[in-house]
Length: 330
Image (tube, rainbow, N blue to C red; front, side, top):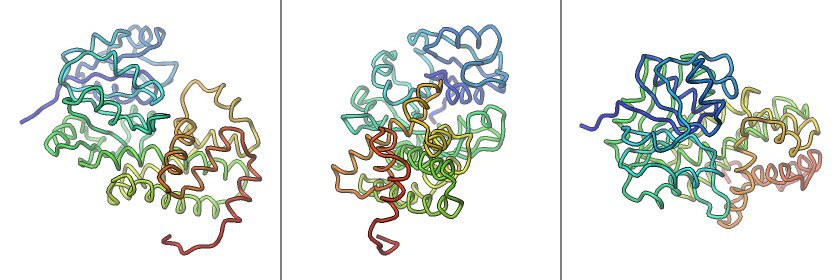
């Protein structure tokens, strides 16, 4: 039976650090790769990551490196690199057979490729998986209860990885629907920006609830058109993650939307952030992919135009509210 004991994490941001701490909390050795020298130095010398996950103590068994070659020979790698930079990092990974578990959310510009698509082109024989669901990094690092989707094409690999990642407070649910897990994670970030805009503009809770519901309809249309399973989109990686990120300013995407709703510039908001609001990168790509596929995604398209500075909040709200009435299931 396949088993995984020695994990590496590719990416030293908040989510990568939280996942590494989750795996190292019981004293298991975990190696984390980070691009920033100050991150690797702080993790190794002080057992903390003040740049991306301040306040979270890290296990001494968690070690950091700035050399991807050091990840060779491990049993599995969790890849937590923002999608715009993912292809370049994957190209420099050591060549072996360790499964890659993708924890980043988004779609690559130009290719319309999700992380698994990018990896499959580079490593056609390597096992691939997706880890996605309602998770805030600081809560996972603190050991608070969390449930998440672990998807892999091979059910045996999905089950084995879920068992290896499971902790008393961290419960992965195995799935074979990698497409659904990736689409849920990417689209919910865009919808979280939209919900933040609603909050920042003071439009009320009715409007937020309506936006979550209609946004989930967009996610479902896009997902089903690309081969996702409806059950996945209605589960942890879709609806579950959508509810979390659309209702809390702890979400980077929601917080970005709040700023936009208050009339602040997207360029300024993103320039001043150390961490990435993934929905800002995903919105224009997924909006373009939806148009190319004839899929109606008005909220996603509106967020893309707001992030690009092509429209203002008042005009965007008016455009959405003036759309023709339709049956709810349409």
